[in-house]
Image (cartoon, rainbow, N blue to C red):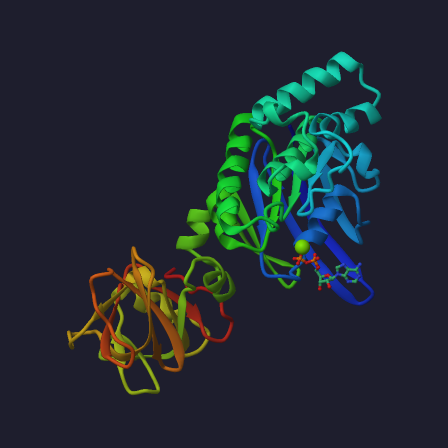
Length: 365
Ligand SMILES: Nc1ncnc2c1ncn2[C@@H]1O[C@H](COP(=O)(O)OP(=O)(O)O)[C@@H](O)[C@H]1O
Ligand SMILES: [Mg+2]
């Protein structure tokens, strides 16, 4: 396996920048997810690494080698795509063996590698079947196997689970994670699904508009999103973002809403807000950090429930505050009705504060 380094990677199509100065290092054996909304440049970035698309500028290093000008076949990578592109007429065995035959490996070595891949992916019993005799998940496993037999330095995967139904996707998610743990493989995995990235990856590279927004462990990205885009993209239901105004009087700082209510801030949050470039501040709160009360309590903000969605384990309530949608989760035994008045209490230690002008998270120092 090998490390992959992207340095100031740029891809332009005409005057459109699909990938803007992306720099990141994928360590040897690391599972990195490139994640972001449709069109943000994930596939383009992956195809640049693969060599399927020529770079405009920057460097790509795989192992110790700058591969900018190498053909895909010389980059020691294997790709797994959303459409598995299996040969319909060939058995699973032959599908796995084919890339090795192309490389003119001896027959015994091909057999050994195919059997080993089948064992790792638990599909020895499927080797004689044709792709049409397999389920979607089994076909995806064959596609993984075909990458595996090549024993590449890096696996590149582009939305490999997108064609599977929801249940199978969850199952294959753990299988690919297991695959990574067993092989200690270097994997770059593209997905638009933040939950896939959060659950599978060692680190996630969150992209938007061709720019890398944040590159960190899922736990760090979740706990400390660097800006409002990352804050609202990662986590479900999305973090609520409420635009407010900061003011300080008699030594205490409050956030006030055009609706007339105000929220006193803890000393730490007050220090953060003082670092904003203007008085405009956006309060960010995840559903699990807002307490819903059914009667007035000190420091809780009055609101009105709008929709109520029981999911079994937890009930999601949506309310409007200062024109923003606020998502709150409550235990299933708490009965809330649409249009019912509620009071929302924000957890000072777990709230996020963003500069309303720059949309960047404000820090205390
Ligand atoms: N060959 C191309 N010519 C022009 N624009 C392209 C080409 N390939 C991709 N793009 C544009 O680059 C942007 C990023 O595309 P892509 O990397 O496929 O996004 P993602 O995989 O994140 O959905 C999109 O706006 C897309 O339309
Ligand atoms: Mg894509």
